[in-house]
Length: 89
Image (cartoon, rainbow, N blue to C red; front, top):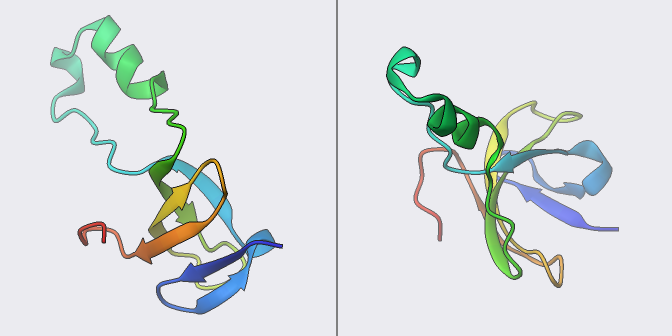
């Protein structure tokens, strides 16, 4: 079982968490001014790297907070976790 270190609660088993997608996706400031193609890209296009990736997770069965996780998608090893708004280590 994968152990995920929540920045607030410490290490917990993976079944307490839910994947929230790629971290760092910023909503357009004025959605009405964005073209359909750009809006579609914002909604649906995400990176799918082989290797290190910064993701967003939520500790659903714990503190309920979102946090960012640096995880290797090949080995499934977690390099670090950090609170939203903090720089990735």
